[in-house]
Amino acid sequence: MKPITDIDDPRYVKALAHPLRLRILALLADRSASPVQLSAQLDATLGTVAYHVRTLHSLGLVELVDTRQRRGATAHSYRAREHPRFPDDAWSGLAPVAKQRMLSAMLQQIGHYVTASAAAGGFDRSDAHMTRRTLHLDDDAFSELAAATRRWLGEAEKIGEAAAERLEATATGDVAGRRVDVGLVVMLFEGRPSDDPPPDGDEDGDGRTRRPAAVRDRSRV
Image (cartoon, rainbow, N blue to C red; front, top):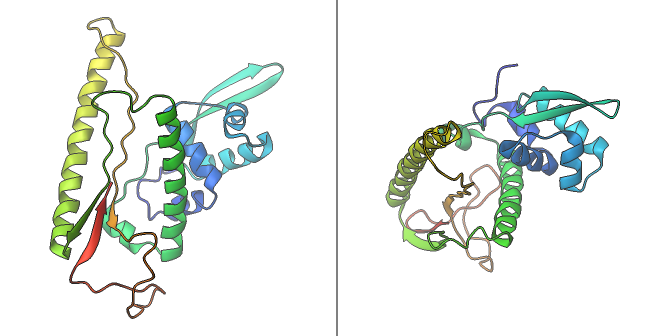
């Protein structure tokens, strides 16, 4: 099956229709695992987890990487394929319902991931970082900030690629080094205080109202 490479692929939207599938994808992005191992970690029944793993496999989001005989049964281990890209045109073209469903599932998973990492000492390093900032920008500045974010993420990918080469050399004994599993979450969005009432404005056809376009709160996490 052709791998899913963009978020506007209908198979990807279907995959995120259930929050448990996103949690499974997150776990399989870090390591390979069988449905039995996943069910224990997710505190879900084996039948439910196995069903969602099969669905993700049929959609091309996970791949079978190992098959072993254990206690008279066959254990199948899976691993997530490369994450789909989030190009601007694909994201803006998603239907509002699909977009909100995807956001809800992703934010839930990010919350679990960050909380568990913090509890395990993930922020103990002196150079660990967390910032929440509210900016007051216009539309041009928001676009500039979005472009700057993409450039910075590109630089982060280059740093990761260089680290992968050094870690490979470490595995062969050429150099000494330690693998560090790193979490990186970047968000850029129009922000509104949680106690702020819905803004006044005309509906633009998708059931949502808009603030005046002159100046909006822009939030970056």
